[in-house]
Length: 289
Image 1: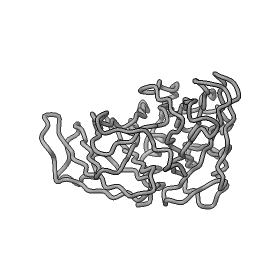
Image 2 (image 1 turned 180 degrees about the vertical axis):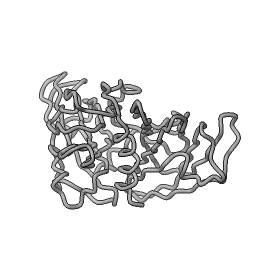
Image 3 (image 1 turned 45 degrees about the vertical axis):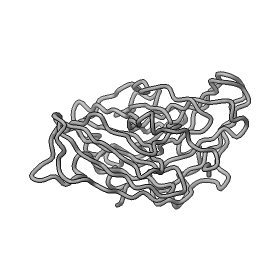
């Protein structure tokens, strides 16, 4: 699957429909840990003008303690490392200090292997005892300076969430989706581990009746995939307009986000995919790239 083309086509349909300016939505939950998986997007939107990108802004904060150095290593949607081989170090010398970063400052936009979508592993290499926060913001903007998407009045389709520090070895789910009003839904799955994982996805209507057959998707190590919900299930004549998705892993871990984009007035949401706490574990330090 051409993830870049698939996601870009869906987002463009919303951006070009007259999306309004929104402030960054609060993250769905606090998520502090010394290592986190982080979404990365940077796609040009020439239809909105020269230099406009659907892009990512990252705000790292040393919420637990001083002397926090977050090493950020990134991957594209073809499992390849992008950016400097040693990653980029985000220096946070004081408690409460923050630093803004973008795909440009993470040095991935000049990498010929970068396709426009990927993910990063951010790990505190100074001290595993100092957990940090990261606010991930996505949206369309021509202000590509760090923090620009948060401050520019021309930024559109803006939403924020956190990095993710836990993965599930079994159950997870998308509790609610709807296509009413022209909403488009994208499930962004990341396998942050070097070992492959297989996910079984099940689609349900609002009464809990399964729609269509079980869907199996394989994810190689360090991979990211974007699925259109509910279209990926191929239910005929049509999947339910509103429902939920149940996700089961084959013992290896996964995590991800659910992104929705609505045609006028241009609302969007950006939330973490729910993981069953009984099957969730922190990102394992030995798996860090």
